[in-house]
Length: 517
Image (cartoon, rainbow, N blue to C red):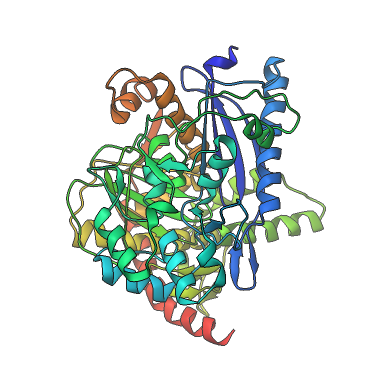
């Protein structure tokens, strides 16, 4: 294998940091990962900077070990690198590069006053997790560090800065910091000026410079190479693509960057991305972001998806170990997901609200995982697991209905990707029941974000003259890609809708629980 003809995609996800190496045929040839978890410290969901550094290096080391084991090669170079991470959040630094506040992740719902004020000011929905909402909330809170901010970025932007020394990011990631003018592939200047009039802050002086897919994001510096690989094996000088967020990499990984295409990413959080060619009304449940090449995208983002499922699977795994029958974790997930297919379509009187944290779509600032059942409910393992899976998609469905029913957004293709779809058919069938439409999953669906980031880096490196990102993906990446498409049965759709009706009512119990427990 010629390492110069490979591309590395690295993504810092919510529960796992993963690296994927692809070859010139865009096929994954090696991977590495590192598991981690966010922490709730002093009311803020965060990851420590030490853990960020440790995780990135451990992930790269695992990738290098995989390359060594498979091909007998030291991972000393690649053709290009791309870095991605969970979007949004708040990472401020002073002029000396010192971190001024804890990393405030997308999961936080602590910026409601700021988000409401900015939405009114801009006439454009500003979700609580966006970087600009965090910045303005810090101003409203009178936080002393604000006056010292010289650079405000996201997690992906921070890693990119460490690797290249460049304060830049891809337009999709930037669209989770501040509203974008898609025609200019840049921050919306009118809104920049409104924020300046409101606060006196010149945003262009502190935000990353915006780049479109295919542009150069810089090169790996000597210090960047050491940051990624402290052993000194990796050599500097490697081209680095503009960093992107997990929304953009999901679109690339599922070939969902053309108008009227869409994808659903489902893991710790879940979100649906629908590429649109028309302006939409302002909805607090809908974010307007962009594709990696700048097209407007309507996004339904839900903070809670699989965390509750993971907790229950861990409990069941602990029980299996206690009775002397320990289970491989991956095999246990597969077994339990498949069991959900046997459940009653409406879950047989069981209900679950999977809110570990607040949820913007349904207006919750905090969450309390809640499982309840009717006295005459059929409490079977199949019904229980189906309840968990439908619960993980219920809030997403509430937001999607606004797009498809109120705004009449049309979808030609809908793809699923992420850990929720690793077990063949199950997650795919559940999502189809939720949206009432066919859902496709590609064979690379489990690779998710890091694979999508690798594709964006490959586009920067190998695209033809004037070749657009959609054309590159269609012709060179997915022309012969294998995928499966499933459509839920009518009774499955009816069952999901019945479950959703009860789910909406159960949210009142969730509100009470948040207040009293």
